[in-house]
Image 1: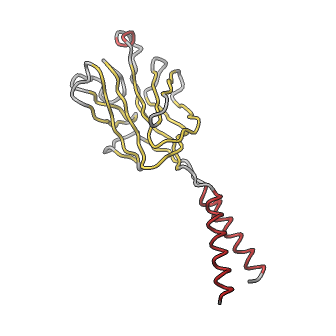
Image 2: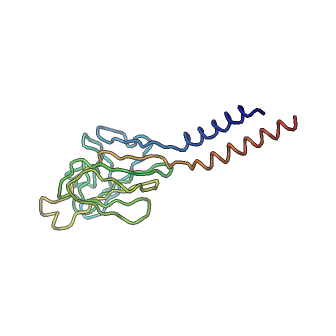
Image 3: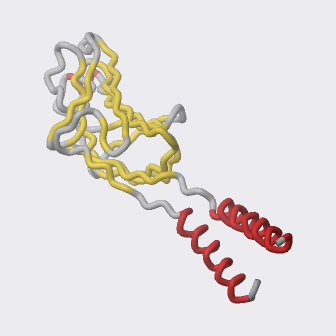
Length: 195
């Protein structure tokens, strides 16, 4: 085998390793209407509380995802926690890197609990409707609106939607591709020597 062929093979292996290992982030936009799944994400909801009897369903509208919780939920197009809690779980078949979540209809009275898989919950509140996550790696993220009794009787109740998320597949390590390319090269060289 000539030096030129060896260098070309090495260059191809390195190019494949770095090209295959990079994963680009995708923004999953939930604004508009939908049928229950978007861009590989599956959606589910849960509710608790005395006003949320009768189950729940995920709703879609121009501001994003919401929850219709129970028979008395008057704001079924958003996460409002009215009389209890309302949660949406966004799940993927594989682990993803979660880098951002953007809320719709967000104001200073809103707060949310975010929980990746079964890890600790992160409480978020404030004026900014966009939250940069510290590259959380999980297959699911649960967003919960929880209202207190003070919020129940005031204008500071939670009432927001999930407008979009930014996720990327977990990148495969380049070393794995380099190892496979090297083993393939050794196999090819051994076959050539036998021939």
